Structure formats: structure tokens, C-alpha cells
Image (cartoon, rainbow, N blue to C red; front, side):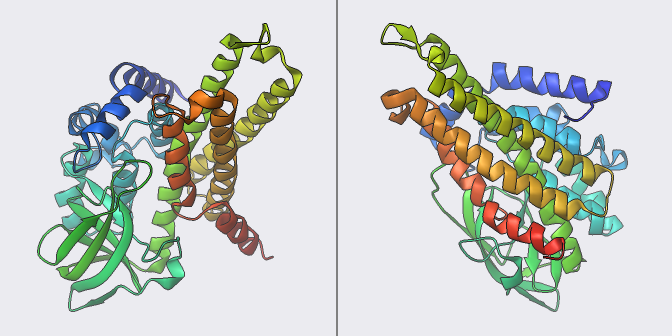
Length: 355
């Protein structure tokens, strides 16, 4: 478990309190039923901007706090507990791309707006149904980018795109040459097909920058998955302690105790792996790619396990839309595949270690 400083502890506690009071799971249900075009509550996102969360990874010179990825992960974990829908993770990853590769002009133009929550930014990378950076065909000619990106998170509302082309990353504002089509997914969040047809583009960096930014986006995603897994476990544990069957609480049955014990140990391993990846990013270690692949593989397997057990141990009620359990397993399945599933990252981890 990561050792937090006073500022990080306060940030985590503030995020937890806000999520519980202002964005419980019921708020997600309300958003899902209302089905806003952007796929999240715009008012809640505005509040996050006012609290400074949109600028956690933005340098102070551009209006951010520059707290780093571990701090961002603490907030995303707490939001993940309650399935709070926001473009925070996507916007943070896009902001990092600008910080690492943007010109002084691009930084001055976009980073203050991102830090204030005024602009939603996102990554547009994958061109097929699965994550595969090796098969990117998007091209740029004369400062104009052309290509189609599939399942772009927050693509319905983004005003700024960080787009992966065959030769690196490009900054593309929404405007002429950018069109989008909504893709309805199980998690009721924003996923759009975005087509770039001669849109104005500014280069941020080569394929090495693409890999760095994807790693940071993956680590942020893992933090949300950690929060979801923790809450799914807590919800199941509370249910077993109160549900009476055959004249006894379900928590007294040894077989169920074993299943809960397994989940608890897997969750502890998941926390170590996820926080380790976030700390590796902040320390700019040379093994960030390995740490991130380890975290995503462990997070994918663990969230899959805990979300399935959430349904199974609740029995019939867990299968109904009236219970919140279904929300967790639906979001889990989407996040497990984003930026590569567990199998993809196990293979990548092995390859990075020379196997």
C-alpha cells in the first residue's frame, strides 16, 4: 500500500466524501435513465473542475496542482467506488500528452482550460475492436489528419482529441474534418466512433510518446477498477452479514467465507500492483511499461472475479436492474478490454522481460 502524504490523504478523503454525498450509485442510475448525449452529468463534472481535480496532472504554471498520477488515482478510485461518470481519466491522459509533447503555444492554449474543467479532452487510439497500437493506419499529410477511431471514451463530448497516427501523437481540436457517431455500450457511458477527414493536426511526438501516454491512461483506468472492485467486495460482504438463509446468516457458511477470503487477498494484490504503477509514473522510472502491464493484468482478473461474485452471492436479486450489482459487472467488462485485456498485458509483460 502506498504511503500518502498529508495532501494526498486530504485529497482522498475529500474525494470519498464528495462521491458518497454528491455522486452515489443512485446518481449514476439517474444519469443512465436520462441518457444525456455526453454520457455523464455535466454539473458534476463542473464541480470536479472547481475542486481542481481536472488539473491534478497539469503543471502549476498552467493552472493545475501537479500532484501526480498517484493523487489522480486516489480520486479515480473513490469515483470508481460509486461508478461516478466523468471524463476525468480521459482528460488527464490527454493533458499528459500535451505536457510531454506539446509546444509552448499548445500548452498555454489548452492546459489552463483543461485544468479548469472547461474543455473535455480524450485519447483517440484504437481502430479496431481490440487494443492494438501496432495496427494504427491513421495518417497525416500537410498538417491534416485522416483516419477513423473506434470506441473513443468521452468521444461524444470531447472538444479536444489526442490522436494516434502511424508516426506518433497529434493534437486535434474539434472542428472541420471531425465527425462522431455514438456507440452504445453495456456500461451506459460515452463511447464514440470518431472520424478525422483532413482535420487540422499539430504533432506532439513520435510513437514513443504514444506508448508513454497509453501507459498513463491505462494506469488511470486501473485506479477506477480498483475502486469498483473494493466497493463490489464491500457490498457483497455486507449482504452476507445481513442475509439469513436456513436460519443462519450467510456469512457463517464456511464455503462462502473461503470465497470472500480469496477475494480479499486478490484485492490486496491488486492495490499493490495499481499503486505501484502510479508511483512508477510519478517517479519516472524506466520500468513504467512493465508496472502498468502488471497492474492492468491483475486488475482485469481481480475485477472480473469480484464483479462475478457480487452477482452470484446476491442470488436472484443480483440479476435484476433494481439492484446496483449489474452496473458494476457491465462497467467492469468494458474496462477489462480498454487499453488491452489481462491476456494482452500478461503477454506484453513477458515480452518486456525478454521472454
